[in-house]
Structure formats: structure tokens, C-alpha cells
Length: 121
Image 1 (cartoon, rainbow, N blue to C red):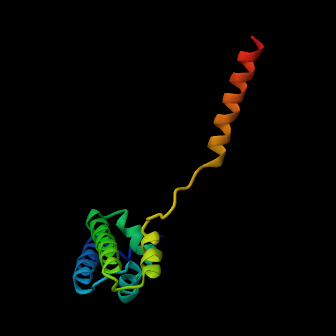
Image 2 (cartoon, rainbow, N blue to C red; image 1 turned 180 degrees about the horizontal axis):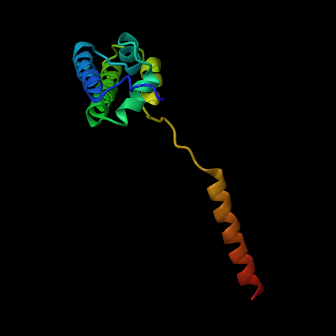
């Protein structure tokens, strides 16, 4: 016999509502802080969002506000740029272009084979 689900649809909606209130009450919202304050493991919070559009939208709002606030505060020199960069990278920002060396090598080999084939004809 399996355990009953701890997070019903109503409970998940309550969590989303609480998150929306949290987002409005802090300058820079942090998902881990919200989860900790509400005694929900952060991983559980994200797993629940996969089942609830309302909670997923709340998490997206949190992330959008965090990103906007970090960028604005850094531009206004209200926070240290290193910390802003670190936090923004956690949200997916990148500060350099990464090149896949294997892809480039593969193209060069194909070009070299074509050149050798043309010379032998």
C-alpha cells in the first residue's frame, strides 16, 4: 500500500499563492529561501511545478524578478558585480562563447578528405 500524497492539488495551489506573496515582499526573490521558509525541499518544489501550471508560473515569475533585480542593481552599482554575475549564471546567463572543438575537427577532416579526393582525380 502506498502512502497518500502529501501535496494535494489544493496544497500545491496554496504553495503557489504563498510564493506569489513572497515574490512581492522581497527585493530579490530566491527559490531556495522560499523553500526553506516553507519547509519544502527545493527539489520537491521543482518536482511539484512539473504537475502544476500555477506553481510553474510562480517559479517563472520568481526567476524573472530575480534576474531583473540583479541586473538593475548591478547596473546601479547597488550590489557587487561578482555576486550578481554568479547569481545570473545560476539562471543560465553566460559570459563567454563556448565552441565545440569536436564539431570543428569533424568539419576539417571532411574538408581534408574532399581535397585529397579532388587532387587524386
